[in-house]
Image 1 (cartoon, rainbow, N blue to C red):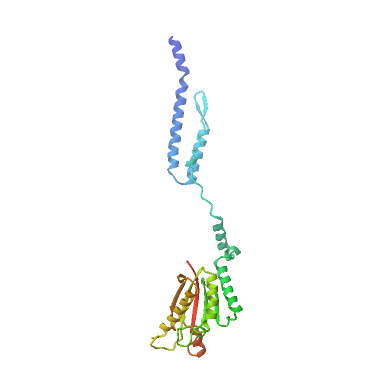
Image 2: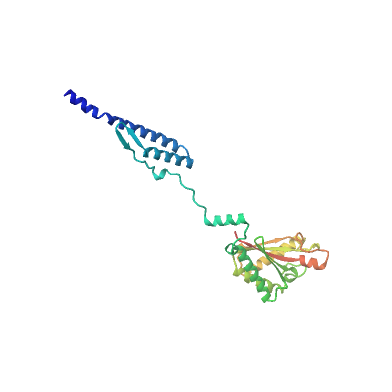
Length: 263
């Protein structure tokens, strides 16, 4: 009986060693995982994972036993997310900035093209009405279009009342402004530097402001929404020609319409 007992006991000698080795391996894996997950660097994390997989894939000799451990795969949710690729549009813009190449046609077909189309429409409208000699239109600049009309066309000298010649010009502008309603209209009154002092106008500031306001009220009466309109008087503070000659003073007496895209 005693002899059989000792024989059975000796045959189980390797079992506890296997269990002990597995326990040590699991502890090693646990501490390596703790170390690797404490760092946010992707490369170090990947190296730690590969080290664990390599160590667990090798055979561990224990006595007369050769027992291979399984490879432990980390859950996918623990993997660091890969950086998202930049949008294609941003990459294209960056490439153009680096090479200095001109923007493509799609980028030119935006607000700038719309402004040029509007300017050409107004210009052709004035030409067709034989009013192009009375209006000076500048092509789009800094996101605006400027239209200048001589003060002599719209008002009598020293007056803020519209003359009989004003309707043809203003009505043509109104038709274009109503057809295209995506911009605001800043009406600016300008005068020359000759002083004026009457019961109605104490100075050129009052005269230029009243002229701009008169045109604003005319536009409203023709159906343009008031929210699109502003009126400002500048007197002789923004001349476009010399006030030393009659011709220069005539150019300075003007109403300017500045078209600006609504925000």
